[in-house]
Length: 114
Length: 114
Image (cartoon, rainbow over all chains, first blue to last red; front, top):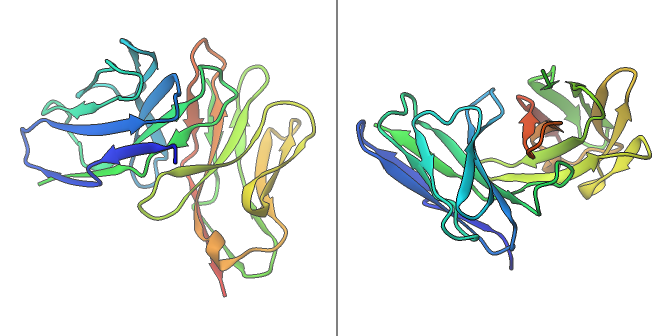
């Protein structure tokens, strides 16, 4: 079955450590996204990529980095510069880059900083 | 600035009764509107969207939504609620700039009691 796979599902990190969240899709979608979800705040866009080797900052990119070396993969690194990294992270993809198509989401990765 | 508001943090309804989850939006130009559902510790699932045409949009799992341009609303409805409909519901509006990005509301928790 086609879909989006995020790993790990749960991750614990000590303060000052970088951590990388994996996102892989086999839907052959061009565009991929990373969102952060906090209770009562909905989803906020961190980064998005419309094509391989290109990506743009979203609304809350500070303290995060991404790469898009392959169409299927869009990993997110949460760096030590991110001041409040504990959150639920969601990866998504969409067909093409229009603004009328729906997003397909992975199951999410919950990051807890100890 | 474009925005979407979900005025209710939680909606409670008895099984078998009709349900409504409210959403209002503010956007320049024609809005593209979406509803997503999220079950605990899972990713979001697409329910339905309004792009153009008939103001009443039908979606997955028996849900529908009514686009009301004069009231700038896009309320989610279902004629008969099920306990399994209990989840977190997000309304979203698409931005009218050159890239495809969604603005999400803060979410409404729907609790259907037996």
